[in-house]
Length: 272
Ligand SMILES: [Zn+2]
Image (cartoon, rainbow, N blue to C red; front, side):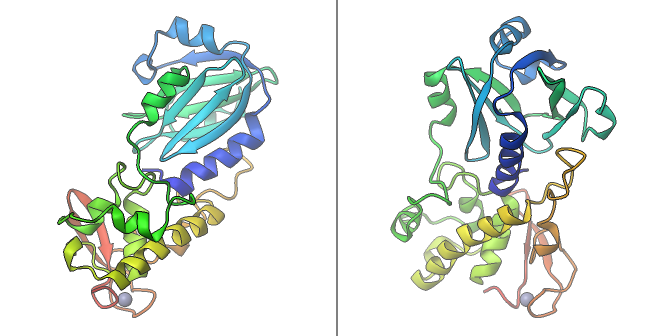
């Protein structure tokens, strides 16, 4: 599932390609992807200009000039693609919603599955973003706020790192990486983790996310024919998706197991 670096990668490319352009056509191939009728959706978007795109957690928010917002979540397999009307061979999946612009380019939302595209006003936007936790790349992500999230919690560390109500936008890949960087095994219980280890974990999270943003995230599918950036994070992963491969620090095979239903990767020499 795309996490902060992947959504930031999409955001920067969307800002470069579609902001300031007028929407000239809307095609909805899968009605359950949107929250209103197809007629309402197309009527509201037609003629609008996308002024800005922001991110909160794993959501992207398209700011439309008329005051409405389009909120999208990719969930597991959702991908976006930008191209010309005839570029459909390069699509990363089945297009569920297509937004066309007056210069004849198109933004394709593919394979959204449980993902969505919701059209909302400002109070609707507040509801969409309600209850999300701290952004790890924001100034609010202080050591005090981070450790405060875990006081009185007795659970296992990795599922808590992925809890969107605590930390927003951190998912499976980067929680594995942050725990490796901090030398903490993913199934450790919170009360058994010392303050020094918590501080290492707090430092690792934004550092790893920023590195992955600058590497282009791990989504391999291209955003456009010219996109040679997406997926650049993959060779930099220390443990994620590297089960059985040698640990980049000690050479022992990276372990792979399921924890709370999610594939979990760690080195039992480098992590304690
Ligand atoms: Zn190791």
